[in-house]
Length: 157
Ligand SMILES: CC(C)(COP(=O)(O)OP(=O)(O)OC[C@H]1O[C@@H](n2cnc3c(N)ncnc32)[C@H](O)[C@@H]1OP(=O)(O)O)[C@@H](O)C(=O)NCCC(=O)NCCS
View 1 (spheres, protein in one colour):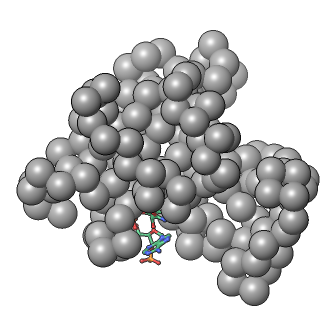
View 2 (view 1 turned 45 degrees about the vertical axis):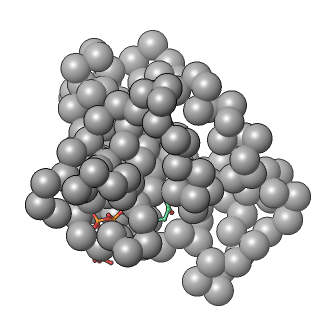
View 3 (view 1 turned 180 degrees about the vertical axis):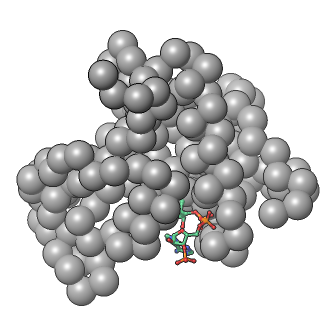
């Protein structure tokens, strides 16, 4: 993970669609939050190796709308470095909570977020069935529900 730089995307950067689509879809849904949110790029040796999209969803809450690392660079700590950046940015902007949603069948992602400190706080039942019009499978498990996860940036009252 040497020489990793995480910077805000500028209008002249090419939109890294393969990365965005690795984490979410369909494309028109991504386009909606890409317009409202802010995209951050992880670069190594001048190459974009990861990206995340952050958005303020409520007065005290930021959400990671999309996060992905290039296949050849997964498992090297780049995703965790982006989570650290998201946490720092949200705290700097005065947020109390950082949120993320992931699939019920996304077992490695569930480990990834919980290892960082996210807690499961809710279930959006059949979210992915509504989004895709069908249930796909991951790890042999139908992808149906979105698990809502939260990381508190200050102690809850
Ligand atoms: C999830 C993701 C962003 C993690 O980034 P990363 O740089 O690989 O993560 P780190 O190296 O910091 O941490 C590795 C951990 O991430 C998780 N992980 C999830 N998917 C992984 C994958 N395909 N390869 C490697 N690790 C993965 C595992 O928990 C892994 O820990 P392990 O090696 O003990 O199994 C990345 O794997 C990815 O782009 N996945 C596909 C897109 C996606 O599903 N995004 C999240 C949507 S909710």
